[in-house]
Image (cartoon, rainbow, N blue to C red; front, top):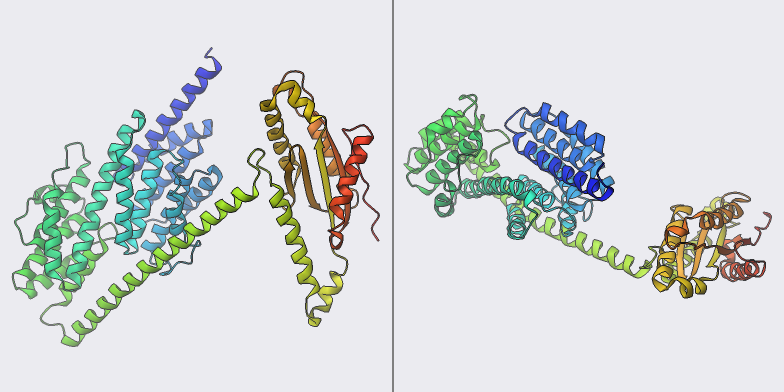
Length: 552
């Protein structure tokens, strides 16, 4: 039999290996049928409860469906739901960025996202958190960059690539070395894709000199990273990119065009073949033969699908439109549309940056608020949170009292404010716990008390530590006798807790004083609950004191 710790380590290693396998499947999903591989790993992951592996498999299914032109919304929605449950910031960012990219691909994304509401904005800010596996963070940054690229916000996509450079430069567990090597390959291919998009965009707006300079800078970098272990279809794509860069730069091509043709699944419609035709159209345009350029571009524009740079297709359409037979007014109209589209992109870039900044401020505000209002030791609210909670109730009462006459019916219903219950709780003989077991054990008792109280209160109630071993619970009374029942449950839960796991021979009990009354009597309720707490102590501790009054 494997000892407990060794068995745990073995299972953890199996989990890491399953994650590695999932990333291998993700890479293969766009070129091969991975149905069987996904099913086998999914079954294994389900049996072990590896929800993060299953999330990545839905990502693989999504990529395969998208590549086949099928609806992948079910897989993307499942990714988001699973990521929210897992609470891993990078996996949630990956899921949200996938949502944003699909929306962008379908052209259904809003051009100006509201701060904090757009999935892509949230994904960017989530990646400020470093508490995730490096391979998850790389995958998420890649997907965020892809979404920005799909929205035409290439400057933001390049920023994500800069962050990836920093991630790759760090030291990582050797088990991820192969995954990171594959991810580097994706980064390189996507970077070339964006560089082609940039150069084609410049040519599309008529800045052919700018496109030439950009392409000439990139051309020497295109082919050297290719190695024989690259998937053949990827090699064909990179060679097609090299031919496009060469055409835009006005230089001889280092690409092996026969390799591109060899890997074409359907020479009539293959996107890589279409890119070669666009390169030939560009060469014809630069040679001063607009008629031939238009014929070549028009013949291939329809074969350029969603998996190639969007401005490559737009440039092909632009070259086709510049046929000698096209009326001058139509060309003027096309130029105006291109200019409007370019300016709109710049406006959306500004709006997206503003949205990201606003989301970062919101997250920082929430973090600071939590730091201020949460007790570090127990995770409950602190005294400041308790005061803020009561102040909120007071403000709510003031708003009700100030309602105008036309709200008489609401005012009649609100004439008797809802009852509140306040419970003051002390740990019995806590000083003796510290004296007998030490302050470290005392702190652990307080931490465990925080867990017990958290389990006993509802989401709308408040449990807070006021200081030392003093706690308070504030809740709305929603039925006669509920307060006493809840108070007895708290006392019993503390009594039944396995305190001997904290320290052998230790037992813990609490005294609880409660008082219930209208929220309008808020100023009196805490003092009366505190008085009842001392009644519970005088009567022998480990009990509840205070009875809810009968309703008027």
